[in-house]
Image (cartoon, rainbow, N blue to C red; front, top):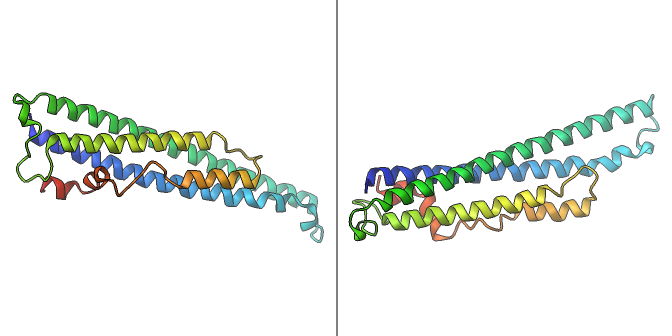
Amino acid sequence: MDRKNVGQAFMKGSQLFERFLSLQTTAVALMSNFGNLNQRLPELENLSNYSGLPMHDELQRLVIVKQTKSLETVLQRLHTTMSELEDVVRGQERVCTEMASLIGQATVVGDAAALIPGCAASPDQLLESLQDVWYMCRDELCLKHAVISKVSLAMEQQVFGELQALFTECIHIDLTRQAALLVLNPAEILGT
């Protein structure tokens, strides 16, 4: 077993998890942005809010068009962010497969369970941590996709509020789990 490659694979898995968390933060902010913009639409559609202004019909139409374009832009950015999250989760899967292959090449059965010199965890523990984190991210991504599939420009605010709460909860990401703690601290774990 090439211990150096196992360590490098673990580092890559750690970087992917950090990327997932960063993209997730972006997605939550975009969802909030969408909600703020969408919440203004009913007031913008109320003609009485424009009645004292010259050319109020035209002004209202222009404002609504601009708001709708902003909503569409935010929704598109949210979908782009979700695609990036998918790429990260696929990358996590590849790293887990690569690391399992590296560990599987161990010539002695106990070799995979033995600590790497200077490392606080065995290769098996490192792999298990990466797999746990990958499963958390994969499940969270599925939930977020299910929520986003329900989001539309025509939805009621109450329904959107419920979806937004579900989207921001991060139900499957538990940063207190040992796997997450290991993956978020690769230098400490690998002794580098």
